[in-house]
Image (cartoon, helix red, strand yellow):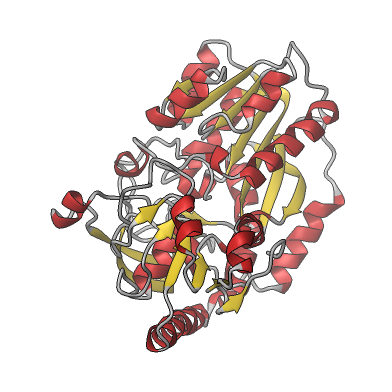
Length: 428
């Protein structure tokens, strides 16, 4: 998600009682997950004692007008993204995904030394570094100063800013015209989603291409991926809704690709409405796929809350049985989605001893809410617990392969979404 750190502006005028796209009432519930801490608010023991990881309402609703799925309570972006603990480069699989994108995109759109690639929510330079290596000028925009500093140190020019219509107009006034813009897993992070997309129209060259990657709502619903619902994800997107967003900014989708990332994502290629890029057949095919699944009508969103409750019961039953059998359970991956799963399932440090994570910024801290300690993977390997729950289920196969010595010692690997299931190396 949850991969890029947020880069958004324009929060103050938004009302959680109205849709952030069309302004219609938000009266239809998709799922009410109660009150949980911010999913990336990792705390020290002292901060936990002081209640720094306070809970906020977490209720996803379906707009009665345009069917945009969104949270009905807005946590200020500045509270989430100013010092962001997620580093994209910590996932080797995600870095490879970015490399493949660059390798394919450079020849497809004729990018070279005279081009400009602009990425919003560029994080630690995980993607733009591949364009830099190819001799193509780049500019990253990220709201988190800590990760922007890492990108800059690695030779990726990066500006610390929230991106939106105002920032984009300022960039355009400085002569910025991008031949390719990239927004990976950031659309969901934007409270003012209309102004955000309008910003891309302002900085995009006349024949430029804007790409947007985002987890596909179709898979969230089908796979009960409720753990991807958390406060920094203000919206949950279908292609039908994204097309409406693009049109409001004078843009149009001309290509769309289905991706396996994050449990099923879309990459949308967009351009100015008058640009020459011909619409590809996948655009109409994706629209029809969503209509067949019911995403163009309220009926397609009913019954989700009951399926969520079944997943939560399954996790609690598993942990209770493991405790009764005297087995020790740990977890891997201090992912934001894991915090939604654990907190809404009422799982704590009595159930899971610790969670291992490669990100040194999270190690030595506690998960928000559950207060499960975060440790380095080396501790997990040395401890060899009986069971490991892999919280970032979207990379479960990659993790299981990395932890092969544990499997040889008898440790079992599990995921909890969409149900409790064992994991084999290379699966997922």
